[in-house]
Length: 368
Image (cartoon, rainbow, N blue to C red; front, top):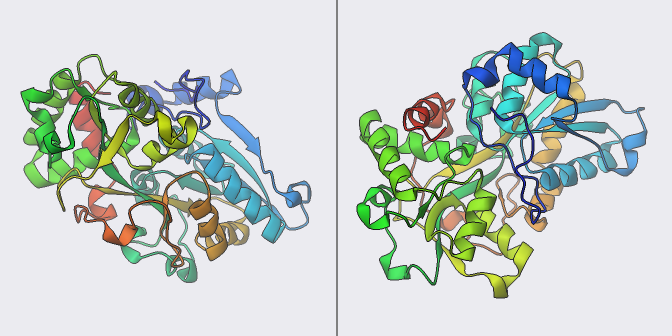
């Protein structure tokens, strides 16, 4: 069970996200929630940092955020400055927060939930816990990156890629499909972060394409090939591949760019590679936000989602150090492969669903 405690990794400028996944009995149970709340400080709570945060004349919001802390804080700062609405941030693993919202029910203090991946949002939407997002806000993001029912809006996107150590693996040796990573040639060379929610969409993609039995077999072979190179999160995985402790792994592309920003280009001994176009491992992950139906600050919450998808909010993402793709208001990411040139698997956010299937398979493979 993950109680939101950061994984010890002092180099990180971005607090590591938790490794446990949705659906675990211990996490979902009321006892786990009670323990988490009783410990105090387990959930990181941050006050808004904008100039207007001291003023309550324009209202206030409570944001539950599973997004990276710096990304969230920069967006909140901009929103507070523009609107005068103060925002209190509670940051933790997105699945911990989604479970907490479910447990709190109508008594939840949360007004907005900002998730790093679509499945936790889909879970809350399926349980009737989210309000409908304003039509003008939904229109700012491509419809394929929004809730099919209009219950949350897409804000950023990332793409799954291979990261490999350039001294240990030649580019010509790289697999063109995620399925090839199950082959014996990668035994002892592969790195895995099975507890990462970013890994779940790949598992879902494989299961939808090849069936659950094949997906489980792939996971078991993947785990065997990784051996002792199992890491709590993608930050650690990228670092270890860059150091040569492992040769290759699957991540979302922005973790590599963050690593480069931390250690400098001259200290990068790794590179990124894309799978073949439309491969099952080539998946777009969407980060989105929704409004809690129980919120008593619906108007302010709608303004916050409108800001996240506005040109101003998307430019904060574009020029920040998150290295995620802005996907709303026509803003385009600079400094990496253009979003429009990506050729991912066509799996939709609706097909990715709640992540329950991926979690089931990951548990059966003992990667959770």
